[in-house]
Image 1 (cartoon, rainbow, N blue to C red):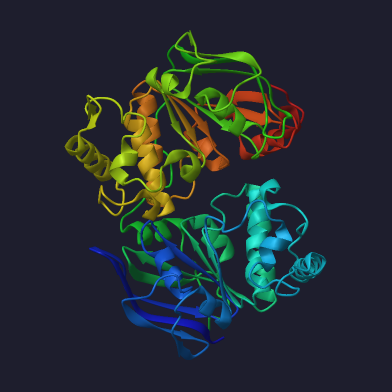
Image 2 (cartoon, rainbow, N blue to C red; image 1 turned 30 degrees about the vertical axis):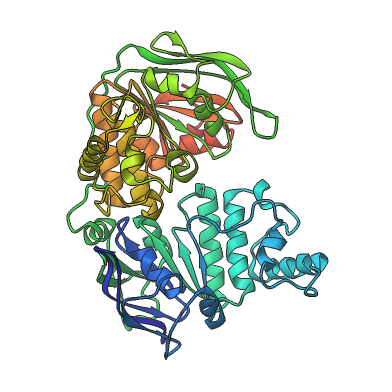
Length: 520
């Protein structure tokens, strides 16, 4: 099995920051090749160079044995290279078919053949086993379905080498399993896949080989599956991959002692609200969160978790019920007042709700406190204080690059997440609502964020953890509540919970069904 791609000595600088430092990468034809590394290690930059979005400062690219210069994405597409970005490049009001054929539309120069586009997309989806509804509008379909649309868009343009940037970052466990099947089918049909990730389990489940990048350099390329290898292969362990990524041993287990719950600080009674389509999203939710504990909310995406968070933070108006923070009714209070009373929020969508992407790291680090001393005095910003504050958060949370003046939109997804986590924890809240707090971050950052959440609990803070990662819920929570179709259907101490029990409850089953008929 020969190489379809060779990148030699690729170097890329952004001012004083060296994103890629003489990286070599070889990808074999017909394999799934993982690109593994910390947030900010240079993985996406390297693939953006391959896709023509950036030009390297040094190095050579050979594709199918020939040296190539990839000046822009159009040239990459001509060569047969496609890329699905972590944040999708779709037009929400357009249909699936319109998005897929955009730029290569069937019909005349003045008129789109919509029926022809629908048929082309339907035939393509059947050919590759990627089921989509060509007539559905993108704004109305799930994230997992949007990803299928992005993959079909690349295949429609003739991609033979497909780059997937953090393809599972926003998917549910069920969608991840579907994506793995899609990737394997594509390889069986002759495609080659490079997927950028920081998730160790995925590498070991999916990849044939993995290249580990650390601080802009290739530190290892390892066989996982043994496919194409001359002899038996012993795949690396998660711990070995983590050490290569981070440059040190990483604890993959959350270390925490028993909780010491105090008085109730957040109480939710009979909470109801409507969803974005006008249908009931929350149906009589009752919750109590105590100081000094982590309450985990488990559930398949779309079962009311988002609406619950929005009601608690003031982003959505409930139709019934009450919310009390330290005994004070905050049900009708505006967002700012809730935060002033001690609420903090790590949002599930960092780009829509967590950051102002055109603002600098320093400016984002004071959002929510930007109008108060010491960052603002008599309506004038105290920039020296703002910068010093950002420098402290950058150091304490290892945000890269460590430059307060960097635009937040230019950070990697994981470093954007670390910036939000740093800002919200630094507020020293009474209640911290942490929604998908480690979505899109690497194993080293996950370890640090988990350690911080436990430390906040041990300092007497109350943490409401909402996560689609069952491993995270089980590892961090002191108590676990399961949401299904807008209701809390079960609550239990974390030590009584198992993946099997939670999985059944998340699908609408009962605890007795998961425990062989023994109800608790």
